Amino acid sequence: GAGVSQSPSNKVTEKGKDVELRCDPISGHTALYWYRQSLGQGLEFLIYFQGNSAPDKSGLPSDRFSAERTGGSVSTLTIQRTQQEDSAVYLCASSPRTSGEEQFFGPGTRLTVL
Amino acid sequence: GENVEQHPSTLSVQEGDSAVIKCTYSDSASNYFPWYKQELGKRPQLIIDIRSNVGEKKDQRIAVTLNKTAKHFSLHITETQPEDSAVYFCAAKISNSGYALNFGKGTSLLVTP
Image (cartoon, rainbow over all chains, first blue to last red; front, side, top):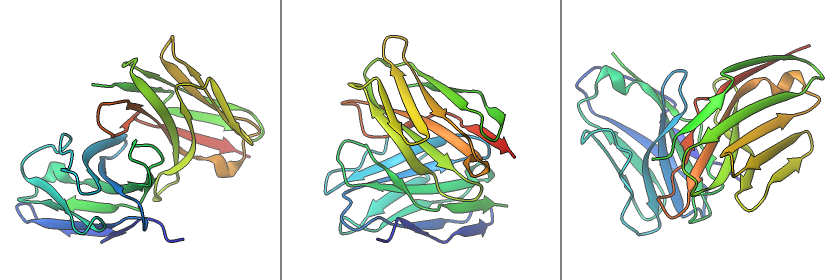
């Protein structure tokens, strides 16, 4: 079946602009995660959605970052007033489990802030 | 919070040799340890995982071992092939403390023919 998809694949923006990144999880997966991968680094957790529960936002680095998930499916990560240090690959993952196990990743969005 | 250390950062082996990547974690409450393979420009792919109630798990040429006492786990790849070349990430999840994975910084594995 179809895997996790993300759009756009690449995004170049100017410092100070807002950006929106989209994630389409695997159909039927109730859990959805956003991670950030900076050059040469591991993956850094940003936010987690599970069903209709309140999201776990504990990994968001600043209040410029927000995310929502509509209808328990598609999710959008928004970064306001982008800074150069926001440049990274933003990865979305979904899971059929509530335990955090078996997370399947999308291809990511490479964000470059000039 | 949980801290995952991964070694080595780079590893070069000849085709047919074995490769071992090691990770340590800090929180004894961690109970799930997946390994991901990420080829250049592609998404991380889950290749094997192990839960804390198991000491070893094997899937064809790859295996993972877990030592809960020492708080470390390792990925073993036998009979390596050039297509095994990639960055490998270990991760750990803490039970009853959110659902996010804490990742190591990755190991770049190069298998030379």
